[in-house]
Length: 356
Image (cartoon, rainbow, N blue to C red; front, top):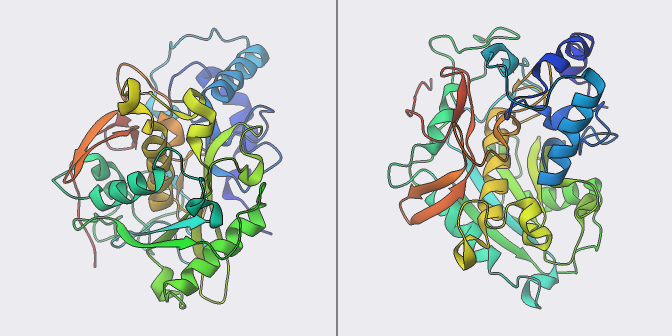
C-alpha cells in the first residue's frame, strides 16, 4: 500500500477549499472526497484529467457544499502553490532528460482501432517536444528533487537537480504490442503490467534505465481502460514497482471516443482539431509525470492534492488558456501548466538548467 503525503493536509484542505472553489485553475482534480472527481474511490488515478463535464460537476459540488459563488473572485497564489513531497524510493521528479516510450496496447491497432490516426500524431508530438525552441516544456524545468530539497519546499535551492529539457525530442521508443487484443476494460493492474512488459521490450531492465523513463499505454478505440467513458476521466498516471525498478506509466485511452468531453476541437476547429484532445490530455500527463514521477513524492498542492497539469486543465480563454504550441515539426494543441515562480498557469516559460 502506498502512503500518500497528501493525506496529511486534508483537514486543513476541508477548511480552506470553499475559499478556493471558484477559480478556473483550482487543482480540484485530485480531491478524493469530491464524489465527481475521477480519483474518488480510486486514489491511484494520479493527475487524472477530468472530462469537461466532470470538472464542472466537481466545481458545482464544491460550491453547493461551501455556498461560494461559482465565479472567479480570488487570485491567491497560495491556493495553487505546489510543494515538494520528499520523493518516493528517492524519486520526486524526472531530474534528467525525459524518455517517453509509447506503447500501443492490443491487436486492434492494426485492425481498425485507430480511426483518426492517433498513433502517428502521438509519435510526432513526442518527437516534437523539446525541439524548435519550444518553451512549453520550460515550466517543468523549475521543479527539482534530491537531498537538497526540503520537505514541502515551494522552490528549488541552488544545486538541486531540475527536470530535464529534451532538446532532441522526448520520444525514446515505440511498441505496437499486437500479441493479443487489448482488454475491453483493462484494469489498473493490467495497465501496469503492460508498462512493465514494455520496459522489458525496450531493454529497460534496471532501476537506472527507468529512472527518467515514462511509458504511455495507449488503448485502441472502442476500449474502456479502467472504466474510461463512464468514470469521468480522460487519462491518469501512476507508477508500479517491479524487478526493473519503479516504472512510471500513463493510462491513455482513445480520447476522441468521447469527443469534446476530452478535448476534441478545444483549440482548433474542424478537422484540424480532431486530435486536440490527444495532445492536450497526453501533454497534461507527461508534464505531471515529469514533476511527480512517483506520486505523490513530487510536487503537489497540499490543499487539493493536485499536480501541475490539474491546476490548469480546460482553460479556454484568458490567462493560461490552451493554445497551439510550435515545435520543430509543427504545432500541437497543449494546455498550460502551473508555475510556482510566476504564480500562474504558463503556456511558455524560460528553460532552466541545473543538473549535477
